[in-house]
Each structure stands twice: as C-alpha cells, then as structure tokens.
Image 1 (spheres, rainbow, N blue to C red):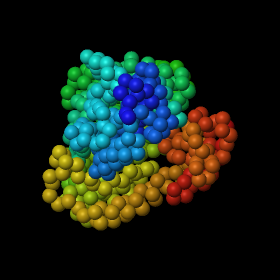
Image 2 (cartoon, protein in one colour):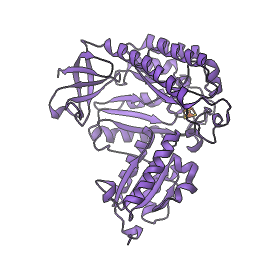
Image 3 (tube, rainbow, N blue to C red):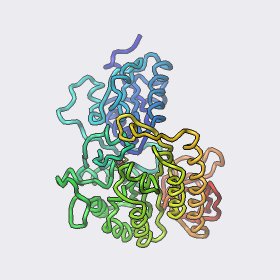
Length: 439
Ligand code: SF4
C-alpha cells in the first residue's frame, strides 16, 4: 500500500539536460534537506522521486518520458514529482504516467518542499539557491533565467520564464557559501547568460555597452571583490553579448577562466538567417578573432547544428570550412531535432536522418583535428587543473579540467581531489591529454 504523501520522507532527484537544470536540482535538494526530507541513495530506496526533465531535443523528450515511465514500473510505491522543461509543454501528458503525483512548473521549483509537505505554496515562489554540489569538483551557479531571443529551432526559450536575473547581493552571498564549502571553481550559468540584468534595470533591448550597470561585467566586477581562492567560468554566452568590455575584463582578470563557449550553430549565412541568429558568419568570426587577439591562449568552444531544414550540401560545406578556420578547442555537434511549437518545425525541406548522420560524422573529423591542434600547443607547459572527485574508471588516473578547458589525465595522490594543482602536459592524442603532476 502506498504511503500518504505526508509520510514520505526519502527523496531522490533524477536530472536531465543542461547546467541550469543541474543547478536547480541541487537547490531543490537543499530545500528538501532543510525541510526535513532525507536523500535516498538510489531511486529504488526513495519514497519520492523528483524528475527534472528536459526538452531541448526529441531525444531529451524521449529520455525524460522513459525515466518517468520506468520509475513507476520499477518502484510501484514511489510518488513522482515531474518538473522541468518537458513538463512546461506536455504537463497533461506527463501527468498521465503512473505514480506521477505532482506536476511542478519551472517557476515553482522553489516551492517543491512546500508542495510535498502539503503546505500552501508561498505567495512569491522561493528563489532557488545552493550551497553544495556533493561529489562534484565545481559548482554551478544559476544567475539568470529566460531568453528573449527566438532562435527558430529553440524550444527552451518558449518554455522558460521571461528574463529573470538574480540580484548581485544574492549572487555574492551564494558564491561566498560555495567557496566556504571548498569549491575552487564556480560556473556561472543561465538560459541566456549574457542577458543578465536587462530585467533588473528595465532596459529592454539593452545590448550591453560598458557604461550600463546591466551587463554581465558588473556581476564579474562584484564577484572579483570577494575574498577567497576560487576561479570563475562562464558557461555559455551568445555572440551578441560578447562586448569589448567583457573581453577586456577577462583579459585583465586571472580569476576568470580563459574559456568562452560561444554558440555558432552554422557557418552558412542563409542557414543562420533561417535560424533567426542575429549575426553573419563573418561577424561571428570577427568577434572570435577579437577575443583571441586580446586573451592569450583562450579556449573557444562552440555548438553547431547540422541538417537544419533546407541545409544543402553546399551550405553544409560552408559550415565545415568555417569550423576548420575557426579552430574551436571543442565543438558540440547536434543533428537538427524538430521541436513542435518552434518556427523550424513547420519549415519545409527537412534533411533525412542518413544525410544528417553523414554530415555529423564529417564535421566530427574536423572538430577532433581542431581540438587536438589546440591541445598540442600546451605540450611541455604547466596548466592549473581542478582535480575531479573520482578517478578515471578505465585507467584509475586522476583527471580534471584546466582553466582553458582541457581535460588532463595524470597520476597523483587522492588528497589533491577538488583542489587546483599544477600539471605539466606531456602527451596529446585524438581523444586524450596526459600530464605529470608538478605540485
Ligand atoms: S539564445 Fe536562442 S538557442 Fe539560446 S535559449 Fe535563447 S532562443 Fe534558445
């Protein structure tokens, strides 16, 4: 017989999707713990399972539904709380799954503990905050939600709230707690990180000039005044928010990682227009060249979608050649996934799965070559590595990321896990970078 909801105390959180979801799951975990709930070691031991879903691709939808369906089957007495971006658009469908007891909107995630205690939700949803990330070496800090750009393929901007920026005092507070808890790297995340502040300062259409308070640089400047030994990484920033002020600030500030993830999506101008991306390929390249010219050794990572509707072979070749010239240190390649409700969903000229797969493979070769070329430049040099909290399962080696986002494998003692150490790069191949622990 299933337990009444009030008697359920052991919870488990299953998270799908992006860093924002990971941040929000951790915040929910902390709110539940503070409200007297206890985290179960596995789904099977839990009375309540919170599934934080994702809808970024059809695959993410499928996986989210599969997790919810499997949970109910495997543990018939579990109460499932479904939340996240899939729930925003398919709440009615998700609610039909066995054992789903609650459907919680993204904006109400901060009230999950109250909902579970059957307390009236607070008039204002509680702000999500975190202080720990358990077994992780770096902490994600969500400082912004929502996006007003309307990329034609994007479902996320449709299911998230309007722009919502976390005020600077809350950001500083949260970072101080994370740093006190031993985190040496904080990753600032958001659905559209570069748009931080637009809502706070009521500047719709703000484009981030250096004179305005409402820019990400004002957050970075405030964080820079905090004491403590930690470094800061930006998770992803759209090209239009990469201002000269931001570039100069990163160049002058050793606390900020020499790494920018700037989504490209396509190297073909027609496809960029169809995607509703507000730049041409040459404008994108100009921004990247400016960054590389000012910040020595910076890692540029990016996202590319292949097989967007009406992408011809010639257009794909433009992307291929563009990525070859761009030389990103890492490229996340996605095959186009039609998401209903988006403009691209209704576009004619969808590309077949087999062609998308071929393009994916071709681009992967270029991406791998360019990543290796970037990493090779560091052979013989020392990099500051934040050591992960687990050894590599295959080799037993320690591993971690440099500030310029190179994952390095090396031998060393366990007590340097979660710390930043110097590692000399000794070897680079297609998939791995190896090094020697220095100090
Ligand atoms: S910038 Fe584009 S892809 Fe990113 S969240 Fe906004 S609309 Fe979606």
